[in-house]
Image 1: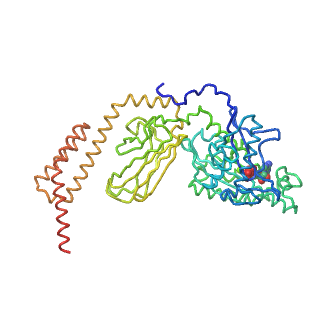
Image 2: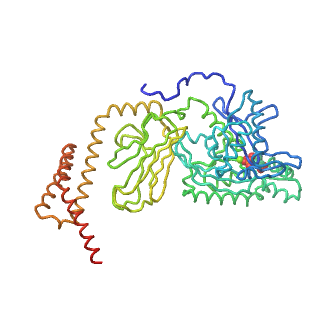
Image 3: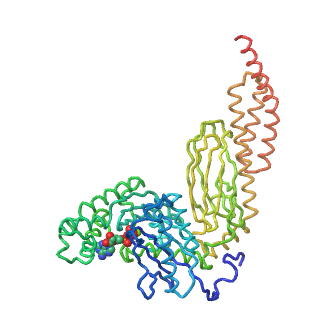
Length: 542
Ligand code: ADP
Ligand code: MG
């Protein structure tokens, strides 16, 4: 074996630890704690029942509901001493204590989910609440991403997925794209006052009741004179609204319904048959419903917690096993991060344009130990646009590769004068096994000499072509500075370089270029002198 990928001491039995990591869906209406064991996720259960608890704080002056809605202003007092931060802290503390009872282990770590639209403040507040509750957050993940993980959509083929989350107080839709093992949120949409509570309010109003809890019970069990037909009629306008939001989200993501590879239902309100039917008709395909929509987010979080703490995961590499780079002129790979670099790591290199007036540059991220793009693995392609038109070689584009502790690679390209930036994320280890790594290395050793010779030849050819192009354009402008004999000498020399390029012999190309360059030297000096003279004349006239 050429390379050891897993950490040492793995793959064998782990010492029984007395601490474990769980997944928590800290919801607006309900919060859920789950654990991944024996190959699947399950909701934790202690002697009081499942850890599926209302996100409600009881205070002396009454109950506090939906405090998660205030998480972007975490320290604003909501009632009494309570802020969104302390409310979340309390809910997490209860889940932690009960999880420890249920498991008989300490629970020090968790993956916690947050809505995709949560801003930095709300995300930091969630982390702070956890830390105050004695929980280290292994990672915050987006709720829709967690649902997609629970369905194993990161393991299968690449695709575009819609997560339709109809909960108690809110409706959220997310369009996710799964590429190279990374989920990206393409678009989100939603309504902060559209959920099961609104259905309850309609039922309460219809029957003239004054008790929302009764309505909720009637809805969930189809009792108290509420039949399915009536429920469907009452829900219809609300469901229509959710589908209009879906339509907009698809538009924002730039995709059509036909391009959706799967729809995941999340949230208690998607248990309603009428919701399922409407979603199916709208997207023209059956939504995924194998997993309980109440628990699917917590399941994904539990799975992620397991993956982050189990050492056998090949994603938890502490070095990058294969070099990462980009494609440059002539199909040549320029390595940005060499193999065996410890992670996390960040490395940058400056590149420039090849043609005059070039305003965009294609960036092709590749992985491998070979000198040519065709022999490496293609990871991602993107285009940096908005480069101001300049002479070839004048633009400065900084390409930065950064790999985080989880092996996630972010490549960004920034044009230095305008600050235009474009970036892409990939997981270089996605889809590669230990054997694949070993094979890539073996091939690079076998082809090392041939590769390096080809690379030198290609570089020499590109340089020669550039030299010819520069001279031809100079001759077009300033041929009058030369006599016929000199012009002919240039033509012969240029033809020599062109013939040398055809022979594909690097040394001949270099020799012909050297000849041409020494012939060009006095011409270049003449051109400069001429330009200065012209400028000087111009100034005396004006
Ligand atoms: P949140 O994500 O906001 O915390 P949930 O996903 O837990 O909310 O959803 C809670 C909502 O789901 C409530 O409005 C509840 O009445 C509704 N709900 C739960 N079970 C059912 C059911 N069987 N039928 C209809 N609605 C249900
Ligand atoms: Mg939810």
